[in-house]
Length: 405
Image 1 (cartoon, rainbow, N blue to C red):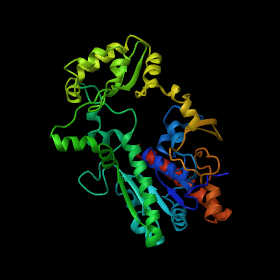
Image 2 (tube, helix red, strand yellow; image 1 turned 180 degrees about the vertical axis):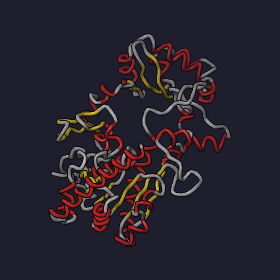
Image 3 (tube, rainbow, N blue to C red; image 1 turned 30 degrees about the horizontal axis):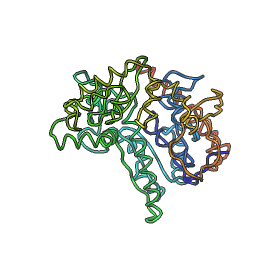
Image 4 (cartoon, rainbow, N blue to C red; image 1 turned 30 degrees about the vertical axis):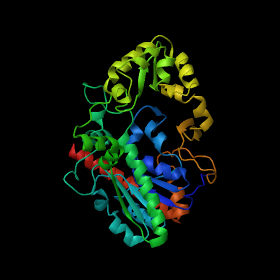
């Protein structure tokens, strides 16, 4: 049984690949939308080749494409372009993350598609936006993070810039794109018209950094690398005898619990302003105390007195954590090639309205015939022509490539 939810009845033509695009359309599929992922014949999504892989399926594809139908179409063939336009006629959303201008060259930009379906909503994710001095530049997550200043905030003070461990530009753009689609769908109920939505990696990353920019706007000083401690709150990672925990230095609880009560009478730390001004010294004293015992001991002591604290888990420990298990954050699916696979569930929870089991990410072109037949009503003969044109164009392309070499 396919997932049914608040977006059941909404059809999304997903032309995106890599991370930002598929991340957002997977969110829509998790909410019940009928997401049809279009991939280039033979090659498919660029991330299919990225290891580690199970069988022929790369981990990116498995992570970002559940609850979708997968089809192969070649837009360089008459039948492929016709099929795309036919899908637009019976769909609500067309979603891509191509370079700016690519959809116009393809003949699939909003101005063209709204002539086919006036209610269509088109959502595009680009690196920098559809206009402007950087419009034609290529971008990926790391590039956007560098330009947006995110990397300047990561690493240890005085050290080199460092990329965050998660692709925040891709992820945030995907989330904002999904949000934009949902807003446009809501707006369409009133206006009866579609919309063009533009999301870019640069703006998305900067929006996540609003607090840091406001700090700069007020102080005039760009924040530097944040290290493992919060820049303004007494929170961060501290070493223990056998590892690290992250905790907050709460006053007066923490000094008492780590057997450093004398800190409460130390004039360096008797006000919050002084504790902030002398934070480096305070952190060193607290960490020196925490190094005396194991993480497990300190977590029991600190959490027992409602001091915020937790272990710093590696991913193998995260998936076995009791709260994660209780929340059913890890999904289990049966993939046609890979067998039993796991994935991370959508974090949006409803008290009702989501029914069915998630479907695994599709193999390349897995649902091509099904979609052409059931969604577009194509005859077997017409489906055969689509495949024949794909094959012929692929052979021609290979010859052309060999000639150039």
